[in-house]
Length: 156
Image (cartoon, rainbow, N blue to C red; front, side, top):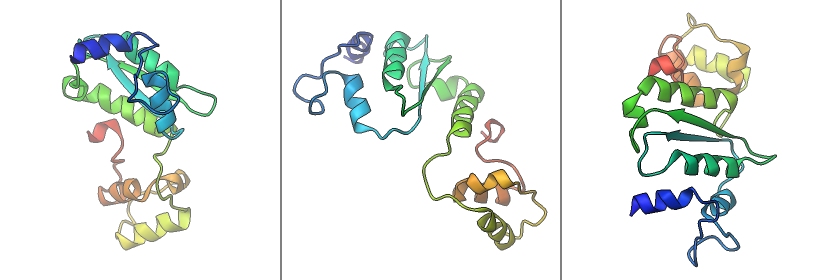
């Protein structure tokens, strides 16, 4: 059944029937209507026998608008095994995406960076002005680790 759905994704007119989003004629339109305009990272593999890479490419293209970026990364591995098949490539793809767009969440200013550094007794850890845009969780992980960015591919 999943292979049939995957094969149908290759066609851009994959109909939702009566169960889709109001006014949406395809899976692509329904997905775009339901999600915020946040940048998307779309992963695929030529070895995926369930969701053909051509269908995933069409899906990624359908997400791209003037208000939304959609980054497509082609990795090696079977269906839902991309992380296990090549952890380094997976981590690099995610890190590159996150580097382009910070995930939504509470942001900190430089005063907060310095305050958190003092609270964690991490005066020996270098902080830079760009870290003011980091989320609290990323900044905390960096300071607690002694200066290792928890979102870098090397940390995986």
